[in-house]
Image 1 (cartoon, rainbow, N blue to C red):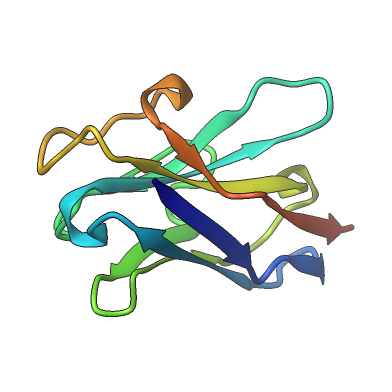
Image 2 (cartoon, rainbow, N blue to C red):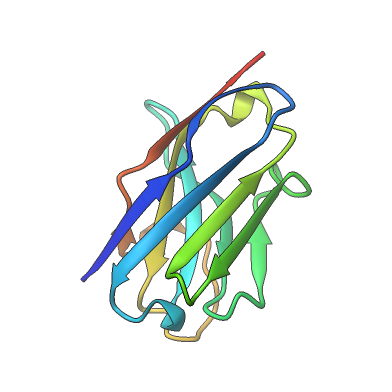
Length: 127
């Protein structure tokens, strides 16, 4: 079992920044890849960013590339999403997710590959 708790969401003006955090507990955090996804009401949960178990590989959706940065601190069991130059279209509920089946393997982007999810944190960007 893995428990994930996100924090850091909120209301920000367009062009501003937010930093999301996700603390994991349960299985050995440093063994598996992590991802961030987002979802608007009535829409499918979409990939935002993912990071390998070591932090050495990162991947981004085209819509956030160059503005968002994913990172992790395995000593703190925490993954981060630094979001800069925010746009109104970034408004969503953001979820962190763990791919505990990855076990030092490939980083995946499909939401169905991730088996544990946090409760989500709301990000609202005003124009």
